[in-house]
Structure formats: structure tokens, C-alpha cells
Length: 339
Ligand SMILES: C[S@@+](CC[C@H](N)C(=O)[O-])C[C@H]1O[C@@H](n2cnc3c(N)ncnc32)[C@H](O)[C@@H]1O
Image (cartoon, rainbow, N blue to C red; front, top):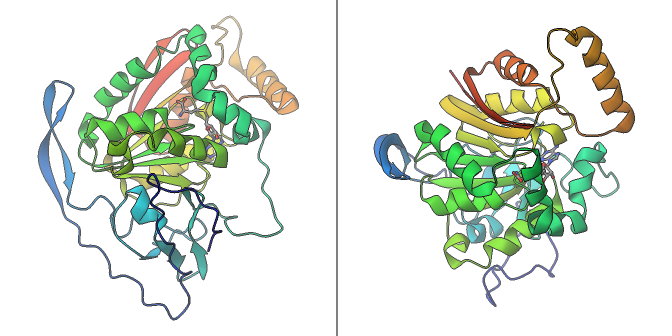
């Protein structure tokens, strides 16, 4: 399970890795877990939210192949050290998962020796070490020109939408270099935060930023590699899903939102931002322009920007309700809830 060249998790302290879970292993018994309604301070307001006594529910992490809960061997908890020292196994698929480098790899292809998965270029681009390095060092700031208000304001706006999920577990899907995951984890609003991305290098960058802050290293903040179209969580196990500037990068927005809807618990909140595709107004029928736009995206293999109507339609058709949004030029922040 993993190599010996792993970077230290905390300064010079390297945690020993657990042996791979084998068939006859006695896995750790399930964690005790309670949920109660409680009050939380979000910004300057006190709100009623969900309180969990244990940040990592026993059945939270699921096999990306069959969605059965993963059995864990190792220390409990959602912090980096505990996850790093744990082995996870699907008893049904007989597949083991472990922390490679600094993140827990829960992709279907984790552990494959010959096969490598290549996604469309809008996903592959972000796997590059150079793009991952530059992302928070200039790349993301460019989004402001399209109407993105910037991470501080976007975080504040998202926190407003997430009020019903305060005290619960938040998954920051397609977290990039973790700019929002870190803000969510530092806010103290959530019992746990999972920073999730398909890009190995984005997750390494996320870790590089986290390790600069002791409070984040010790927070309930885990790094997970996964495909948004195959989220490794049990159905109805997550209180909040955030997806910043991501929908236009996903290989299949419909599979992704269906997955987000599946993992949200009743009352759970999804908040996303993306770049909008231009609307041509009523004088240009969308039946004419939509196929042209789709063809251009497919031919150029570029970002798949959607119109606001398409995003709402997609959320609704994936069973989400209470759709609402804020738009500023090409920027949209939208939110929808699991009934
Ligand atoms: C533009 S970045 C957004 C980063 C950050 N959330 C933000 O708000 O700036 C898009 C992210 O989506 C991720 N991504 C693309 N395809 C993905 C997939 N299939 N599954 C999970 N993440 C994916 C990329 O790796 C990249 O980190």
C-alpha cells in the first residue's frame, strides 16, 4: 500500500502506514454516531443546524464501484493524519483503497497497473502540475473579468445558502487547490470538510496550502481523489455539496448533478458556480443555437458552459428543489436542495 517516499504530514513527523487490509483482517468496528439539532454561529448570525458527534460517519465513504460502505481499518476521524493511517476496503468488490501521496484515492481506477483514464481536455488540463501550481497564483484571479466576485465574496455568498447545513458534513467537489475547502474548514461551521478533486496535482497543491496552517492540519479536513460522476459516498450521507467554478469542466454535468443529488441527505444543500453560456434571447430560438453550441464544444473539446435555464432544468430533473441563483455577467452562483 503506497511507497516510502511520502512527504511528512506534519513537519518532520511521518505517520507509519497501515498494512493493506487483507481478507482475514479484523476491521475496526463502526464508529458511534449521533445527529442532533443544534445552534451554530455563521457570520454574525446564530442559526439552527445539524450537529454530528463524529465527523466521519461510519457509512459515509462508499466504494466507487458498487456504492457499498467501505470498511475502515485504522484510527477514526476525518483529519489528514487519521485518513493517511487508515486502509479502506470494499468487502463486496474485494478492492482496497489507501492514501497515495497525501490524498485518499477513491477513483474506480485506484490501484490499476496498466490502465490510465483520460478524460476530456477540460478535465485533463487541471491534472497538469503547472496549471495546478498556477491556479491560485493568478489563474483563478482572471475569472473576475467574467463577473466572478472573487473567493472571499463567493465564500460569503455560499455560506448564506449553506445555513441549513451548518454543523453537518460538507464536500467541496472539484476543489482545485482547495481555496474554498480551506475557508469552509476554517469557518468552524461544519463538522467535517472533504476536499475532493479528480486531479492528483490539485490535491497535492491543496495539501501544500493546508500544511502551512497548523489549525487546518488538525481540522476535520480530508483530501479525496474521485470523479464527480462516481462519488464515493453513500446515498443521503452528505449535508452540503459545494462545486466552485467546476460544472463547465465536468465530462458529464448530468451524471455529476445526479451523483450530487444522490449523496445529499434530505434537506441537504448544493451550491455551485460556473461560467454561463450566452443566451440569445427569444428572437434566436434555442433549438437552433443549442445544437450548434454542442457541436462546437464537442469539436473543440472545450468547456461545456450551460445557460441558466439548462442548469435549472438539470438540477430539477435530478430531483433537486428550491432552485435559486445570482448572476453577474457570465458568473452564476446557483443553489438547490434535496427534498
Ligand atoms: C476551474 S477548477 C475549480 C477549482 C475551485 N473549485 C474554484 O472554485 O476555483 C475546476 C476543477 O474541476 C476539477 N474537475 C474536472 N473534471 C473533474 C471530474 N471529472 N471529477 C472531479 N473533479 C473534476 C478539475 O480538476 C479542477 O480542479
